[in-house]
Image (cartoon, rainbow, N blue to C red; front, side, top):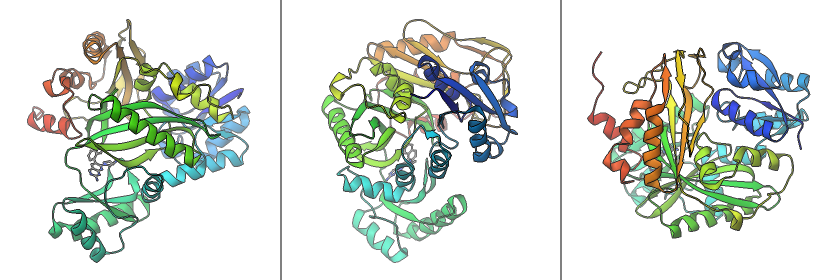
Length: 451
Ligand code: MV4
């Protein structure tokens, strides 16, 4: 097992990784920008190294600075967290070349899944159902037109190097296809340096359901159930829950078996998430994330398994310590992502925390680096806390999360807590009857008061 891990990230996830490491008896090294010198994870870590000025490209994305920090502190392994360098195959390669262990999948698997066309092709060849579309890149307008006629409109053009909603263009009919193709290509070229695009049938009201897998690279693979991530706005998830209120036991079992089989045949290692669109009882694979995810705690709450601990274990060469049949899914969990943002305009709201009181009690978990007097810097993602609640069933979970939100005091900044309170009181949410567009439709129906 590792003796010392360097945590190449910030905020709540850096704290989360520190906690797992500390419980395993592993020393931690925090790296931080000058804006994060007073961060909670920096205070708690055994050692810390300042790696640059506030802009992420000069600090949290500064690969030589991070590798130098690992060298001078004599770390054994680097955990990339989520975002920043977590899905950068070149970084994973550099980490290994410098003699450290990258806590994540192989660079080959990161690269395979980072390109959405090769990811989809690999999954389709492994028998995973995908959205009907081009089997590979779209060559030109004429072939796109032929293809779209075959699958039927609406269709969506997606950047192969994209993901998370960037570089996507919709065509409702043939008249819109040429423009969609041109726009998607030029956006993709500008944003990712590659103009490779592919085409899919556009699903009009799907849910976003993802399945968590854990693999040891030695043939051991388990799934830890699904998460429903359909409550989102502009590709930013607001709230996630597990299990999905839309799936029955049979569908859940089928999805799990499919994912495990595919990952076994890929000889995948580490944590991974297979993202699906779910519509009219059918699953369609869209992308795979080759990292720990922000919403991992809902899976931890229903399985009792510490995903970061397991991720570190398999990265150190250990085999999985349990089989699929050892995993018991219990109760229901909901995560509320609390952002330092205005709840109606979604404008960032950095500043100093004047008052802080976190909720507690049975089944309530807070993953947050906040403390009274902490200054939320303006330079990064605005996620400042995750409230994760577990209950014996979905209704108990809903009652408990409302109770916990009511106790939460975060003074000095605006947060998305009022938006969560709103969502949790909406009949469509309470009934589990929502899709990926529901929250945006709700927000559009109740525009913010003008200033
Ligand atoms: C789609 C889709 C409908 N049909 N693909 C958006 C982000 C990227 N991960 C995939 N996305 C979508 N792909 C087909 N064929 C709708 C979306 C989509 C979406 C997906 C998941 C979560 C939120 C979303 C919000 C808007 C659109």
